[in-house]
Length: 91
Figure 1 (cartoon, helix red, strand yellow):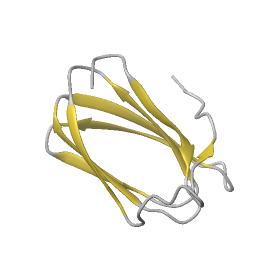
Figure 2 (tube, helix red, strand yellow; figure 1 turned 90 degrees about the vertical axis):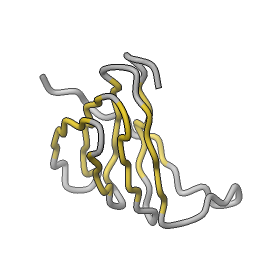
Figure 3 (cartoon, helix red, strand yellow; figure 1 turned 90 degrees about the horizontal axis):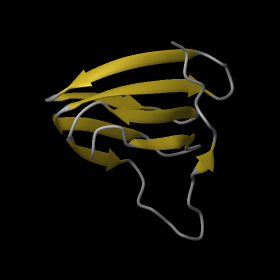
Figure 4 (cartoon, one colour; figure 1 turned 180 degrees about the vertical axis):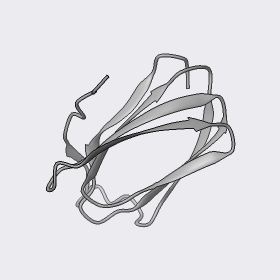
């Protein structure tokens, strides 16, 4: 991913995601869509995070980066389990 790119701004009701940065750095903003709890994480190369169901997430790449993303459920186009939910950015 290029510096400045953002992915996410959605959540899953069933799927867990393990996001692992292999190169670069990123900031992840997370909000639990039911509880309203927010958190921000900074990741560098060789760090990862487990995203649970109902955690809307936005990954902001701070420099040229590479990552691996593992999902607990296979993508099903008939039941995509992806729900748009913009993550507010708190500075």
